[in-house]
Image 1 (spheres, rainbow, N blue to C red):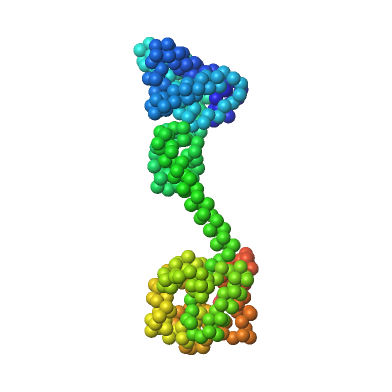
Image 2: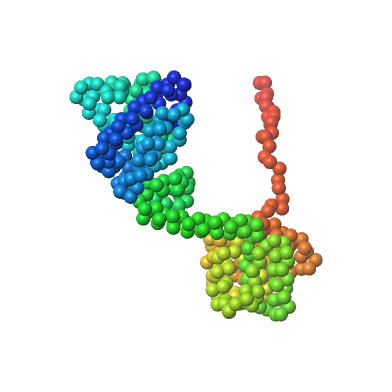
Length: 371
């Protein structure tokens, strides 16, 4: 039996399967005659793309004979796209011949009905129409649009996935050069998607922060390294130029830009020297400032100012008025570092209760004087 995508009772299903058997038998009888006349190629091309017939005639024969056998057994066979394609065009072939005969003789070769109204709502009558099989023997007709789906895949594999289309199922309906091209593209896309998923998982697990600071003194640089080390101990991928440049020769400006773009957050360590260099566009801090000024306009939530020096003199012009984390005082360092972690992990420190029902207000009506 060929699967029908409609819930039919046993009697109606049996009737429908008999009709399916008629269609396939008719095509197979024609194939046998074509083989005897050595004209089978043209006959196969009625229901298969020409490139399949030319390259793999044996496959065509096997598909037709599988359909022939399946239409006669008691198992329900769900057709793969190549089989759907062949069966669709077998139906189409039978319909064209039957309609021609009906127009001439007013009789149907397959006992099909042609005088039903379009809005007929009787399954027993519908089963004797070609429209019934075209509508319910196929879950969809994507097998007719493989070339269009592949062109869409080349533009956006994710869009094809979103459409819930798996092109692997349609590879038998692709010319061999296109099938090879698709396999190569799919291998590349799958590797890229895998990398992206791994990066996303790693990113979700360990948020990345780039620390921007000025080299004020050895003591200050060591403090920055200790901050980075403490963050890393708490699961944050903290990036510092001092560590980056010891691993390889780098263009510092390029390294700064790259890390600013790929990081989840940018920690700006504000000191008096940092503010002076930022405000006057001096050195590496000046270069970063030019980048950050434009960057903060669209990515302000990614900037986390961290105060290390005097609050009056350490805040550069482009960070004025923006809330900061104060790590300048050892007494409240622990609590404020905790605030920093909550910010980096995007966790709420305070949670209000859910909004309840509106209170039932009572209004006192004031009666006028009785005059």
